[in-house]
Amino acid sequence: PPPPTPVSPPLGALGLKNLRPLGVSAAGPHRADEPVYRRRRVDAILCRSALALSPMPPPDHAFQIMLRPTQESRPAPASAPQEPSPREILNPHGAAPMLVICDHASRAIPRRYANLGLDQALLERHIAWDVGAREVSARLAAALDAPLVAAGFSRLLIDPNRQPGHPTSIPAVSEDIIIPGNQDLGADEARRRANAFFWPYHDAIRDMLARFEARGISPVIISVHSFTPIFHGVERPWHIGILWHEDGRIAVPLIRRLRQLSGLLVGDNEPYHGGNPAGYSIQVHAEAPGHPHVLIELRQDLLGDDAGAEWWAETLAGLLGQTVRELEANKREEPS
Image 1 (tube, rainbow, N blue to C red):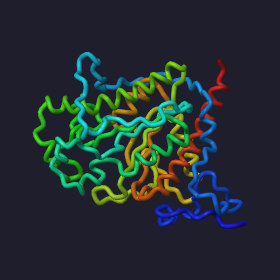
Image 2: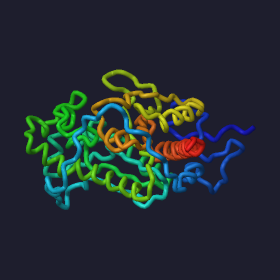
Image 3: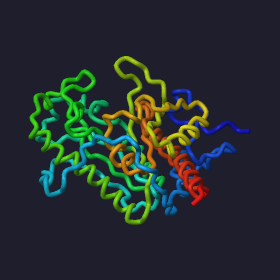
Protein backbone atom coordinates (compact mmCIF):
# COMPACT_ATOMS: atom_id res chain seq x y z
CA PRO A 1 0.00 0.00 0.00
CA PRO A 2 1.14 3.60 -0.51
CA PRO A 3 2.86 5.26 2.46
CA PRO A 4 0.75 7.35 4.85
CA THR A 5 0.38 11.02 4.13
CA PRO A 6 3.31 12.83 5.81
CA VAL A 7 2.63 15.14 8.72
CA SER A 8 3.85 18.69 8.47
CA PRO A 9 6.24 19.99 11.15
CA PRO A 10 6.27 20.32 14.08
CA LEU A 11 4.62 16.90 14.48
CA GLY A 12 6.74 15.25 11.82
CA ALA A 13 9.90 16.66 13.37
CA LEU A 14 9.10 14.76 16.54
CA GLY A 15 8.91 11.43 14.77
CA LEU A 16 5.13 11.12 14.68
CA LYS A 17 5.35 9.87 11.11
CA ASN A 18 2.28 7.68 11.19
CA LEU A 19 -0.11 10.40 12.27
CA ARG A 20 -2.42 11.75 9.61
CA PRO A 21 -4.82 14.68 9.71
CA LEU A 22 -8.36 13.53 10.37
CA GLY A 23 -10.14 12.65 7.15
CA VAL A 24 -6.94 11.81 5.19
CA SER A 25 -7.25 8.32 3.80
CA ALA A 26 -4.43 5.82 4.07
CA ALA A 27 -5.55 4.46 0.70
CA GLY A 28 -3.96 7.25 -1.24
CA PRO A 29 -2.82 10.89 -1.34
CA HIS A 30 -5.09 13.89 -1.62
CA ARG A 31 -6.00 15.41 -4.93
CA ALA A 32 -3.63 18.12 -6.05
CA ASP A 33 -6.26 20.77 -5.39
CA GLU A 34 -7.16 19.45 -1.94
CA PRO A 35 -5.12 20.87 1.00
CA VAL A 36 -3.95 18.32 3.52
CA TYR A 37 -5.26 20.29 6.45
CA ARG A 38 -8.64 21.18 4.98
CA ARG A 39 -11.50 21.30 7.43
CA ARG A 40 -13.57 18.13 7.06
CA ARG A 41 -16.14 17.63 9.76
CA VAL A 42 -16.28 13.84 9.49
CA ASP A 43 -17.32 12.48 12.89
CA ALA A 44 -17.84 15.97 14.26
CA ILE A 45 -20.97 16.21 12.09
CA LEU A 46 -22.46 13.51 14.28
CA CYS A 47 -22.47 15.93 17.19
CA ARG A 48 -24.82 18.40 15.48
CA SER A 49 -27.88 16.40 16.36
CA ALA A 50 -29.63 17.56 19.49
CA LEU A 51 -28.17 15.01 21.87
CA ALA A 52 -29.90 15.58 25.19
CA LEU A 53 -27.12 14.15 27.33
CA SER A 54 -28.45 13.46 30.80
CA PRO A 55 -26.32 14.92 33.62
CA MET A 56 -24.57 12.62 36.05
CA PRO A 57 -25.49 12.94 39.73
CA PRO A 58 -23.61 15.75 41.47
CA PRO A 59 -20.32 14.60 43.03
CA ASP A 60 -20.40 13.63 46.67
CA HIS A 61 -17.69 16.03 47.78
CA ALA A 62 -18.63 19.67 48.24
CA PHE A 63 -16.77 22.21 46.18
CA GLN A 64 -15.46 25.06 48.29
CA ILE A 65 -15.67 27.49 45.44
CA MET A 66 -16.46 31.16 45.59
CA LEU A 67 -19.47 31.56 43.33
CA ARG A 68 -19.89 34.85 41.55
CA PRO A 69 -21.53 37.71 43.46
CA THR A 70 -24.95 38.77 42.30
CA GLN A 71 -25.19 41.27 39.49
CA GLU A 72 -26.56 43.86 41.91
CA SER A 73 -23.58 43.54 44.25
CA ARG A 74 -20.86 44.31 41.75
CA PRO A 75 -20.30 47.24 39.43
CA ALA A 76 -20.27 46.97 35.67
CA PRO A 77 -16.74 46.33 34.37
CA ALA A 78 -14.79 49.38 33.28
CA SER A 79 -14.37 49.75 29.57
CA ALA A 80 -12.08 51.82 27.41
CA PRO A 81 -11.18 51.65 23.72
CA GLN A 82 -7.70 50.33 24.45
CA GLU A 83 -8.80 47.60 26.82
CA PRO A 84 -9.23 43.99 25.78
CA SER A 85 -12.65 42.45 26.08
CA PRO A 86 -12.84 40.10 29.08
CA ARG A 87 -14.23 37.36 26.84
CA GLU A 88 -14.33 36.28 23.23
CA ILE A 89 -17.35 34.35 21.95
CA LEU A 90 -17.24 32.49 18.65
CA ASN A 91 -19.98 30.49 16.93
CA PRO A 92 -22.52 31.29 19.69
CA HIS A 93 -25.33 29.49 17.83
CA GLY A 94 -23.39 26.30 17.16
CA ALA A 95 -25.67 23.28 16.88
CA ALA A 96 -23.49 20.68 18.64
CA PRO A 97 -24.32 19.78 22.26
CA MET A 98 -20.83 20.90 23.24
CA LEU A 99 -19.20 24.01 24.66
CA VAL A 100 -15.50 24.75 24.17
CA ILE A 101 -13.85 27.03 26.72
CA CYS A 102 -10.32 28.42 26.77
CA ASP A 103 -9.26 30.01 30.05
CA HIS A 104 -5.78 31.13 29.01
CA ALA A 105 -6.41 32.13 25.41
CA SER A 106 -4.96 35.66 25.57
CA ARG A 107 -1.91 37.57 26.78
CA ALA A 108 -3.67 40.95 26.48
CA ILE A 109 -3.21 43.49 29.27
CA PRO A 110 -4.90 46.94 29.25
CA ARG A 111 -2.56 49.89 28.73
CA ARG A 112 -3.27 51.34 32.14
CA TYR A 113 -1.45 48.37 33.69
CA ALA A 114 1.73 49.12 31.68
CA ASN A 115 2.35 45.41 31.02
CA LEU A 116 2.49 44.97 34.80
CA GLY A 117 6.08 46.22 34.57
CA LEU A 118 7.21 43.34 32.33
CA ASP A 119 9.11 43.40 29.06
CA GLN A 120 7.01 42.49 26.05
CA ALA A 121 9.16 39.40 25.47
CA LEU A 122 8.04 37.95 28.79
CA LEU A 123 4.41 38.39 27.78
CA GLU A 124 5.02 36.04 24.86
CA ARG A 125 5.86 33.26 27.29
CA HIS A 126 3.71 30.72 29.09
CA ILE A 127 3.55 32.87 32.21
CA ALA A 128 1.11 35.19 30.40
CA TRP A 129 -1.05 32.69 28.46
CA ASP A 130 -1.33 29.18 27.06
CA VAL A 131 0.53 29.48 23.78
CA GLY A 132 -1.48 28.09 20.87
CA ALA A 133 -4.54 27.18 22.93
CA ARG A 134 -6.78 29.84 21.43
CA GLU A 135 -5.93 28.79 17.86
CA VAL A 136 -6.76 25.14 18.57
CA SER A 137 -9.93 26.09 20.47
CA ALA A 138 -11.26 28.23 17.63
CA ARG A 139 -10.60 25.53 15.04
CA LEU A 140 -12.02 22.83 17.30
CA ALA A 141 -15.21 24.79 17.91
CA ALA A 142 -15.61 25.36 14.16
CA ALA A 143 -15.03 21.69 13.35
CA LEU A 144 -17.56 20.59 15.98
CA ASP A 145 -20.00 23.40 15.20
CA ALA A 146 -19.89 24.24 18.91
CA PRO A 147 -19.78 27.60 20.70
CA LEU A 148 -16.47 28.83 22.10
CA VAL A 149 -16.01 31.12 25.10
CA ALA A 150 -12.40 32.27 25.52
CA ALA A 151 -10.88 34.66 28.04
CA GLY A 152 -9.66 37.89 26.46
CA PHE A 153 -7.04 38.86 29.06
CA SER A 154 -3.76 37.57 30.43
CA ARG A 155 -3.78 35.30 33.45
CA LEU A 156 -1.17 37.64 34.95
CA LEU A 157 -3.95 40.19 35.52
CA ILE A 158 -6.11 37.58 37.22
CA ASP A 159 -6.23 33.88 36.46
CA PRO A 160 -9.60 32.79 35.00
CA ASN A 161 -8.97 29.27 36.30
CA ARG A 162 -8.37 30.18 39.93
CA GLN A 163 -10.86 31.15 42.56
CA PRO A 164 -10.56 34.86 43.37
CA GLY A 165 -8.63 35.15 46.58
CA HIS A 166 -6.59 31.99 45.92
CA PRO A 167 -2.83 32.60 46.42
CA THR A 168 -2.21 32.03 42.69
CA SER A 169 -5.19 34.05 41.45
CA ILE A 170 -3.03 37.16 40.90
CA PRO A 171 0.54 35.87 40.97
CA ALA A 172 3.27 38.00 42.48
CA VAL A 173 5.80 35.54 41.01
CA SER A 174 5.26 33.22 38.04
CA GLU A 175 7.83 30.57 37.09
CA ASP A 176 10.55 32.49 38.98
CA ILE A 177 9.62 35.75 37.22
CA ILE A 178 8.68 38.58 39.58
CA ILE A 179 5.56 40.42 38.37
CA PRO A 180 6.13 44.05 39.47
CA GLY A 181 2.53 45.14 38.88
CA ASN A 182 1.23 42.42 41.20
CA GLN A 183 3.39 43.21 44.20
CA ASP A 184 1.67 44.17 47.46
CA LEU A 185 -1.71 44.17 45.73
CA GLY A 186 -4.55 45.38 47.93
CA ALA A 187 -7.97 43.81 48.25
CA ASP A 188 -9.63 46.70 46.41
CA GLU A 189 -7.47 46.26 43.31
CA ALA A 190 -7.96 42.49 43.36
CA ARG A 191 -11.70 43.07 43.50
CA ARG A 192 -11.55 45.55 40.62
CA ARG A 193 -9.73 43.05 38.45
CA ALA A 194 -12.20 40.31 39.30
CA ASN A 195 -15.14 42.56 38.43
CA ALA A 196 -13.57 43.81 35.20
CA PHE A 197 -12.19 40.51 33.86
CA PHE A 198 -12.82 37.33 35.84
CA TRP A 199 -16.57 37.55 36.43
CA PRO A 200 -17.55 38.76 32.92
CA TYR A 201 -15.69 35.78 31.42
CA HIS A 202 -17.43 33.30 33.69
CA ASP A 203 -20.77 35.06 33.23
CA ALA A 204 -20.38 34.44 29.48
CA ILE A 205 -19.88 30.73 30.15
CA ARG A 206 -22.95 30.67 32.41
CA ASP A 207 -25.01 32.47 29.78
CA MET A 208 -23.98 29.91 27.17
CA LEU A 209 -24.83 27.04 29.49
CA ALA A 210 -28.22 28.60 30.16
CA ARG A 211 -28.94 28.43 26.42
CA PHE A 212 -28.25 24.70 26.45
CA GLU A 213 -30.40 24.25 29.55
CA ALA A 214 -33.28 26.07 27.86
CA ARG A 215 -33.14 23.40 25.12
CA GLY A 216 -32.99 20.56 27.63
CA ILE A 217 -29.36 19.72 26.83
CA SER A 218 -26.58 18.93 29.27
CA PRO A 219 -23.61 19.85 27.06
CA VAL A 220 -20.17 18.30 26.95
CA ILE A 221 -17.70 20.94 28.17
CA ILE A 222 -14.26 20.86 26.56
CA SER A 223 -11.56 22.98 28.17
CA VAL A 224 -8.42 23.54 26.09
CA HIS A 225 -5.03 24.40 27.57
CA SER A 226 -1.38 24.06 26.57
CA PHE A 227 1.75 23.22 28.54
CA THR A 228 5.48 23.80 28.15
CA PRO A 229 7.71 20.91 27.05
CA ILE A 230 10.11 21.70 29.92
CA PHE A 231 9.07 23.00 33.33
CA HIS A 232 11.63 23.93 35.99
CA GLY A 233 14.23 21.88 34.10
CA VAL A 234 12.08 18.74 33.90
CA GLU A 235 11.15 17.43 30.46
CA ARG A 236 7.51 16.57 29.80
CA PRO A 237 7.37 13.82 27.18
CA TRP A 238 3.62 13.74 26.56
CA HIS A 239 2.26 15.18 23.33
CA ILE A 240 -1.18 15.60 24.87
CA GLY A 241 -2.60 15.22 28.36
CA ILE A 242 -6.20 14.42 29.24
CA LEU A 243 -7.21 15.65 32.69
CA TRP A 244 -10.19 14.39 34.63
CA HIS A 245 -11.31 13.65 38.17
CA GLU A 246 -14.47 11.75 39.11
CA ASP A 247 -16.34 11.89 35.81
CA GLY A 248 -14.53 9.86 33.13
CA ARG A 249 -17.39 9.67 30.63
CA ILE A 250 -15.46 11.72 28.05
CA ALA A 251 -11.87 11.46 29.27
CA VAL A 252 -11.51 7.67 29.54
CA PRO A 253 -12.73 6.76 26.03
CA LEU A 254 -10.92 9.78 24.57
CA ILE A 255 -7.63 8.56 26.08
CA ARG A 256 -8.27 5.11 24.62
CA ARG A 257 -8.87 6.52 21.16
CA LEU A 258 -5.87 8.85 21.28
CA ARG A 259 -3.59 5.96 22.26
CA GLN A 260 -4.64 4.14 19.11
CA LEU A 261 -2.84 6.80 17.07
CA SER A 262 0.64 5.52 16.31
CA GLY A 263 3.48 7.45 17.89
CA LEU A 264 1.33 9.64 20.11
CA LEU A 265 2.28 9.77 23.80
CA VAL A 266 -0.89 10.48 25.79
CA GLY A 267 -0.83 11.54 29.43
CA ASP A 268 -3.62 10.36 31.72
CA ASN A 269 -3.84 13.22 34.24
CA GLU A 270 -0.45 14.45 33.05
CA PRO A 271 1.25 16.90 33.29
CA TYR A 272 -1.37 18.02 35.82
CA HIS A 273 -4.18 16.23 37.63
CA GLY A 274 -7.84 16.94 36.97
CA GLY A 275 -8.55 16.77 40.68
CA ASN A 276 -6.35 19.77 41.46
CA PRO A 277 -8.40 21.76 43.99
CA ALA A 278 -6.93 25.03 42.71
CA GLY A 279 -8.80 24.76 39.42
CA TYR A 280 -12.00 26.72 38.93
CA SER A 281 -13.64 26.56 35.50
CA ILE A 282 -14.25 22.83 35.15
CA GLN A 283 -15.15 22.44 38.81
CA VAL A 284 -17.77 25.20 38.75
CA HIS A 285 -19.22 24.89 35.25
CA ALA A 286 -18.96 21.13 34.67
CA GLU A 287 -18.31 19.02 37.76
CA ALA A 288 -20.71 20.79 40.12
CA PRO A 289 -23.74 20.71 37.76
CA GLY A 290 -22.80 17.27 36.43
CA HIS A 291 -22.08 18.06 32.77
CA PRO A 292 -19.85 15.60 30.88
CA HIS A 293 -16.46 17.23 30.42
CA VAL A 294 -12.78 16.91 29.70
CA LEU A 295 -9.72 19.15 30.08
CA ILE A 296 -7.22 18.85 27.23
CA GLU A 297 -3.57 19.89 27.60
CA LEU A 298 -1.50 20.18 24.41
CA ARG A 299 2.27 20.54 24.35
CA GLN A 300 3.18 23.96 23.07
CA ASP A 301 5.98 22.96 20.73
CA LEU A 302 3.38 21.05 18.69
CA LEU A 303 1.37 24.23 18.18
CA GLY A 304 4.07 26.32 16.56
CA ASP A 305 2.23 26.88 13.28
CA ASP A 306 -1.21 26.79 11.74
CA ALA A 307 -0.70 23.24 10.49
CA GLY A 308 -0.09 21.94 14.00
CA ALA A 309 -3.14 23.73 15.43
CA GLU A 310 -5.27 22.50 12.53
CA TRP A 311 -4.10 18.90 12.92
CA TRP A 312 -4.91 18.81 16.62
CA ALA A 313 -8.27 20.49 16.16
CA GLU A 314 -9.40 18.15 13.39
CA THR A 315 -8.10 15.05 15.14
CA LEU A 316 -9.73 15.97 18.44
CA ALA A 317 -12.99 16.90 16.71
CA GLY A 318 -13.25 13.46 15.16
CA LEU A 319 -12.35 11.58 18.33
CA LEU A 320 -14.65 13.68 20.46
CA GLY A 321 -17.44 13.10 17.97
CA GLN A 322 -16.97 9.34 18.28
CA THR A 323 -16.86 9.61 22.06
CA VAL A 324 -20.07 11.60 22.28
CA ARG A 325 -21.79 9.14 19.95
CA GLU A 326 -20.70 6.29 22.18
CA LEU A 327 -21.92 8.12 25.28
CA GLU A 328 -25.32 8.75 23.70
CA ALA A 329 -25.61 5.14 22.55
CA ASN A 330 -24.85 3.89 26.05
CA LYS A 331 -27.44 6.25 27.47
CA ARG A 332 -30.10 4.89 25.12
CA GLU A 333 -29.28 1.33 26.20
CA GLU A 334 -29.69 2.08 29.89
CA PRO A 335 -32.93 0.75 31.37
CA SER A 336 -35.44 3.50 31.96
